[in-house]
Length: 220
Image (cartoon, rainbow, N blue to C red; front, side):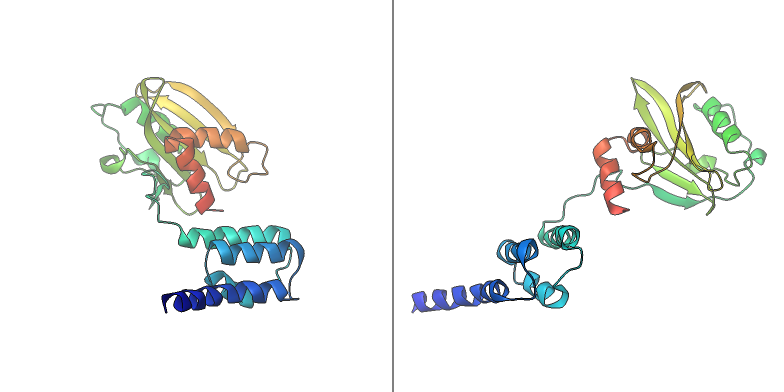
């Protein structure tokens, strides 16, 4: 009796594989991709097949769809602490900001203040310190920053993006206000000439390249 039940279950499981294998809706690489999806993932891939096949631009979209399907059935991984910056709307005239010289990173704040003049962005001194990335914005310009350690020295790593000007500016400033590294980049698009530089800059802000890669994957 048990053998009959097991055989029935196997035949039910095999049914969508046979149907797809004999189907004329798809062929070649796309058919192989659908069959692998049903075998490796589950019957749900068969329902997607009924809804979506045949796919246009199959070489690209098959891979894309299978990747999304496989993510559905993966165990949810714990997201890195710094996987995405906290977005904070912070509009105002930073030239009116008074910075007390008792703050340990007083000089660094003065440097940031000078860079944000005419940006329309201001900062809240009470909540400025952070151990994870923060993006301050006014829906036009923005600054992404974090307090990190570079070569054993505590610095504020930040990148300012000006919407009306193509490109961004990146700085690493120590607590005494000394710029230990700076460069210009061209934002996030992978096709841009400064993309590799941008990733390296954001590695400092996001602490590890892995966390930044995860952030980029989510936002593409």
